[in-house]
Image 1: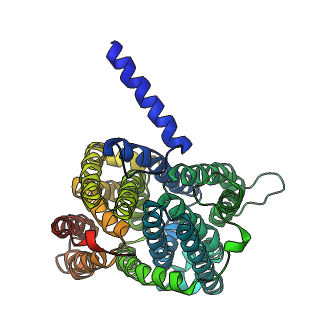
Image 2: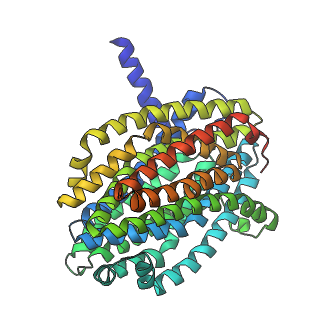
Image 3: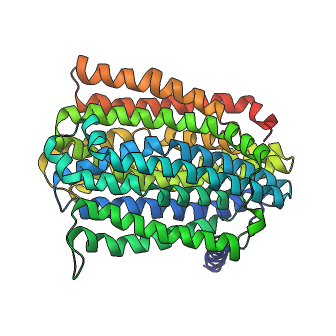
Length: 468
């Protein structure tokens, strides 16, 4: 009993240190402790993202099936556009982590400034195009006329105000690379807290605020995340992060920017491949009707609730790899990846059991239409069968990215998603007449293939010599 109390006290103490951000250097000491210190705030950060997604879909589900489908179609396009920002984030994390491992804080600050500048440039371009062509985008995605008329305002607001979302992720990537995972976590706590409060106000109306329907969800998102971005900037210039910027730091450094762009190209291509595959899958799903599409959308949102914490551990592996390579400790970097993968597999295995047994019950919380529940539940069950593979696949690919080698995961994604997933999904769904089941099977099998290839290539160790 006494040993149990001591273990609990130790866990609470470590947990508090992790969320308070008192440690940001992880190139020495216990690897297990380092994984814990980075993973806890990163898991909580990703859980905040999951909660954000679930809150949106829970409120919007009460509006209409069209409203739910609008979110699915819009966000499939948003993820495609954000591939650029995600690529920049991966590059920023890799470079900042490497500079921190080398004890070069000035170099980390320079990389951070260039990344933010590029993010602003991209988001402005995307915002203008998205706002002007919202209806055309939904139409290209196969949306019915009634859905477009009801939901185009959501698409306009989400794409038009994409800078808030883009900068939130990009600056958090900088914090993660610096080892300040707790700062990234607290910004999402703020963002999600505001979103939970504002969502029902703008969706259903309250007092002087009119009822905006599904468009209100996008308005709430922009406000909540916009406030969080201002909070991030305050921390960067005045706060407790390892990286503190001054006005004199806001200068263009072409050498660093070109290096950032070169590394991010692999990341951009990597996520363009993955997200474009999801866009085409969403387009295939639209062929089976709005209710099936809504079930698929709900299932993917629910799936994010488990995948986001898993991504949190994967991001911890990326930071550990970057910092330890910077400190000239490649073997410690590799050991960190295998240990993180093992812990991730334990977590994902437990989640898969929940989805296998209670998938339809979970989907019915959001929408109880029989077709929505049937296909949403089936989607969750099929995808859950591959969760152990997902666990290792995510950790290992993020480890490549953390080393700055974003090209290897890009090649793996080409094989898994373009050469396998899309052809298999199309053939299974339409030629073998498996319908939506064929699409669900393609998702799981592609992730299993990705994990196997990634592990084989990681063991070869070429990532240890990558320079950034």
